[in-house]
Image 1 (cartoon, each protein chain N blue to C red):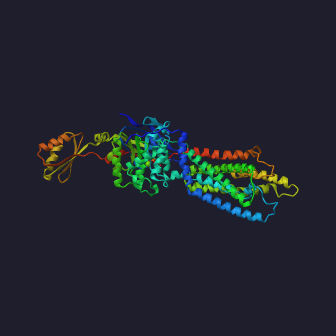
Image 2: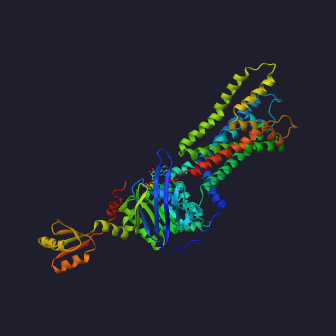
Image 3: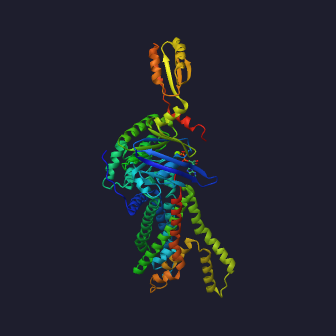
Length: 316
Length: 301
Ligand SMILES: Nc1ncnc2c1ncn2[C@@H]1O[C@H](COP(=O)(O)OP(=O)(O)O)[C@@H](O)[C@H]1O
Ligand SMILES: [Mg+2]
């Protein structure tokens, strides 16, 4: 597997009184083609890490490579291949959307004779073609957001970094953004995004790192993290029966299965089970053998929030 | 979407892209046209005042040279020069930081130095055009209104005067650019720039005069010439850190023509006031360096 971001023992301390340890020994590997979510509360160090990855802030210690380029020595190479949507970005208000994009496109190295066409193409892609010649000062928050995304695409980047992309965006906009990210990775690009809004973006991420007080508390793919949490907290299942009177019998039979750690009646006809390993198959055959009339057997997968709560427990 | 062709930009190309944008911003900016309007107002008022004054003068005492008119008018140009510098310097960096455009700008394959250099080049160009145009576009009007003739020497003097004015404007530009990188907030940096301008232009000369009087006592008729020589030397020393002082020191002799045979001698001007020449060159360089240091060291979030 090839990695597009590799951080080794990154430390960032902001001088001051008292000094702020924004990043504390961060090791990170981001696989190519992933949608990588950097999750953490405000002040965790997400923007600082992104700033270092773009070569805009120098690390105090440690090293990092983006697309194989060193953040200290080859930041120009990084910035010509990575599109960034920074936190709290803005545009030149007195210029039109097209003029803004043309300027940024020229600085991305797009030749002068092609930059207008390229900017128009991108405006169309984000659905702003009709506002191309309107001044940015007339744009709504949502339109500015689209323009923000547009400027990341100009250079046809290999990787995109979004810092808190859904803050202040309405639910429709968030949904649209999720769809956009899923489309863009199909083109072979990697997306690295930071957020403290797991509900907005957790579901589309294939990988994650959870950061708290400058420290990475967990990282990996959704499956790996789920697996690891199950190892510690067990596998949970839920059975709903059509006839609530059968619940007592089911309870007795489930308790006899090996590897069952906990069985609980939740409410009318609903039983929740925690197994020490994957006992889905056993539960299924038990239900069919016992002639239960089953409404549902659910192996409840943890949500991002469960994972997040689990991994950040006891940290900070 | 097809992959697009992109080229790796040379540093000069990057700087020029930024400079071109900054230049067109400046040309359509309200602040430039406001300053030009202010200049014209000042020029018209001064011209009117002078024609009234000259009309009551006798034939022999009436000025015959354009340089005399320029210097006796207190020159509108030297008044707008510092404001031109402040107008383009005070928010050069802080405005982009406040509006969030700096973050987008810096996420491109450019260095922070490129951004500062682009802004400096554009501002130099706009200040140069404004100052030279202000001087030379008013020449025909001045000739016509005051009924005088000019020669090559006058033109050379006006040219040198404009050059010094540009360096003067540039010094104020660099100073307020530095304040812009240092203070983060445009409003603060504007206040600080104007405060420094007022200090060098109004307060410093008063303080300097007071100190000189206190140290030398009142002049007597017997040693008047000696006294004023000492007096002006002392004044010069007290205001050694004032850029206005050096600008005035240099432009004075450039606009003063003793006799008709007295032609502008560059070597004489430069050798007579080496400190002032150095100051006019070093002042902007020092503040530019400080701006670089502040801006490139700053941790952009
Ligand atoms: N330029 C800076 N100077 C001083 N402290 C900073 C600076 N930037 C960030 N910090 C501090 O570093 C910590 C991490 O900030 P940040 O990376 O912005 O967090 P996040 O993006 O996760 O909200 C915070 O405590 C913040 O106050
Ligand atoms: Mg942040």
